[in-house]
Image (cartoon, rainbow, N blue to C red):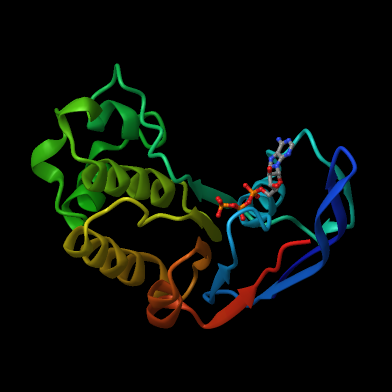
Length: 194
Ligand SMILES: Nc1ncnc2c1ncn2[C@@H]1O[C@H](COP(=O)(O)OP(=O)(O)OP(=O)(O)O)[C@@H](O)[C@H]1O
């Protein structure tokens, strides 16, 4: 069981998150829903340890912090490196990289630069990059935003196959879309604005 606690998180004097307690079993998927500005991304950032600007009280991860990989809303691939070169920064074993690229249907695109890929393809490369880190928990921020319906459905299926149906991996998934929550979540958390 993973547990993460925030008592209060403020930016300047504005309270953004209050009395948050996230509990998640190994292998479980938690979807976090809530209106724009309620603090969903901030919560993921604090969990990933990359929120440096807030005034945060709480105890964070209870016990040993889990190994985390973060799929940001923007794929954040290095534009001057090919798909394979981006992924080999994480995993030098190209066989492992190609196995995962094959699973997301992109093994033919290993030598492409990110600029030559669609957003949906870049997101799939970013998903592979996360998985190569062998995380215990994957954090995802609006991973299907700005994709057309069929591309979003394809990505949702991959997330389900490669993370949700994987017994050892947990997923914390921020979304505006109730369909994502219905299809992927074991647990749903709704955040309100303060
Ligand atoms: N670095 C920062 N400095 C000051 N205020 C911030 C900072 N980051 C976020 N905020 C504020 O915190 C609140 C929560 O922002 P956050 O991006 O977490 O919301 P969100 O629920 O993810 O929104 P959206 O669904 O639109 O992405 C907003 O009012 C935002 O303006």
